[in-house]
Amino acid sequence: MRLIDTHAHLYDDDYKDDLEDVLYRAENAGVCRIICVGVDLTSSEKCIQLAEKYDSIYAGIGFHPHEASKAEKGYLNELESFSSHPKVVAIGEIGLDYHYNFSPPNLQIKILSEQLELSKSLQLPAVIHNRKSDQDLLTCIRQARPLKGVIHCFFGDIEFARQVFGCGLLVSFTGSVTFKRDLITNANLLEQLSTDKFMLETDSPYLTPVPFRGERNEPAFVKYVAEQIAVFAGTTAEEIADRTTTTALDLFNTMRP
Ligand code: NI
Image 1 (spheres, rainbow, N blue to C red):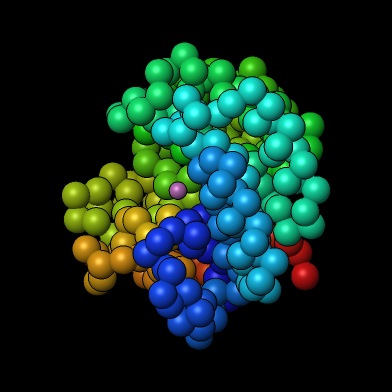
Image 2: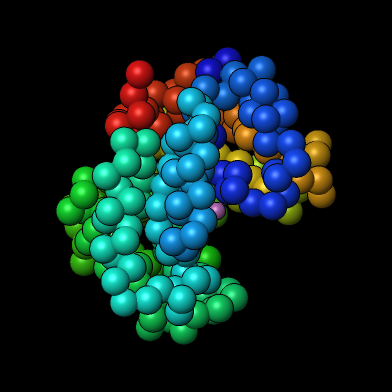
């Protein structure tokens, strides 16, 4: 199986003692590339450092909506200078989060919109977080079109997915597809979703799939996401792995072999 984990936070303290073991297990599980995404300037820089050190790691840079109120004047210039690194393949993690509202919604919208413009001008796909913010998110995306990117950790119905695709974006799925609570919603969605419209991710260290739910997540576990989606889609995990790897290499095309 050849897999890509399109979203992980490997700079997290959770990996400070055993990152090399984590990467070794990922490689053994067939994970050929991992996109490590930052949530502010410090973590974005750490992603680049990891990408420099490890062949399989690529970097995403950006301000997460939780951190939007910490984006200081000039942050866009900083991000732009980071983007010249050859292993930076995405602007993200950016987005909106109205569940926690750690930053005020208006500020979240401003910071997201600025970074969507950056994504467009640098021609780097956007990696977008969305929680309880569907309508404002679609408005921001429509204003910034044409865009390339992905709504990560997608949760929603086929109608919302179609609106996302209509904007030229894709979606990606985490280990949350294995959670009992969402099995029916996800089964309905995945039955109707064409296999070239989505990718896989772990969002490590969060959202650990069954059978390791409750433990720290890691990129090797992306195979459980592939297996669960294969069940929903009525195909094999190998097929899902192949299709999603091709989709990820098409979207994040600067990490092609
Ligand atoms: Ni994330």
